Length: 251
Figure 1 (cartoon, rainbow, N blue to C red):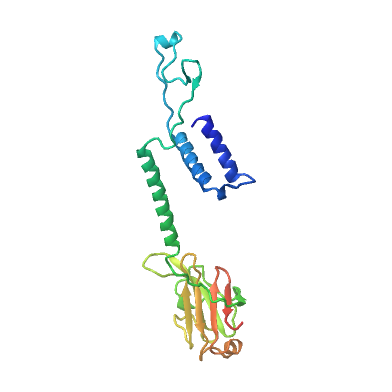
Figure 2 (cartoon, rainbow, N blue to C red):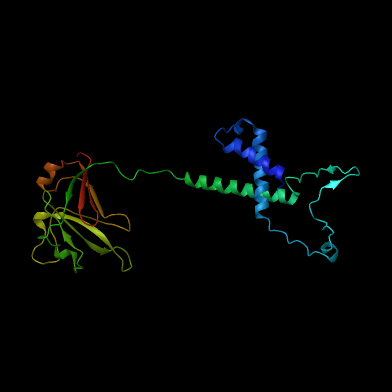
């Protein structure tokens, strides 16, 4: 790009990006700006040309054929050189057009992928109503099997006993955090490997997803629990790795 083209590009950029930009109302100027920016980009990417070695004649003072010396007519006046075309060849024009088409296709594909599924709300928005904290005097019942040291018992919650631990949930040796809710009055305390009661709820986590237990309150739950959460109430217990949060759709 010669100095005139650089100056034209500078003025167009001032109209496009300067504090008093007005090029948006001039489609011809917008088109010209794009052409010159593409030309400038091509010039930056083009490898520098290696100048030919000077011949003995050139060393003696003669000019090389590609030196930029303005032509003169017989009267000594300069003959202006013709400005290089913006697009130097049809092959380069097609390569540039194809690259723009590829970019547009990739952008369209990314947009389509981002809207190709229907979002699902992950929570019902029920408020947290309580938090269960570990009870140092409580231990997991024998039904949980061999101890791993990760078991925790929680304070009696309206007749419900909560326990957490880590258990295998697939064919590998990986263990995931699990949460269990049992009838506090029926939890075995004689080291047998069984349990009694009208209910037992359990749920395990996976990776970033926490261990969760959720159900609708029905007959068979402890009386104190039903007084706090009437039959038909949706409740959810979520283990965060330390404590257990209690959520309810009725507060």
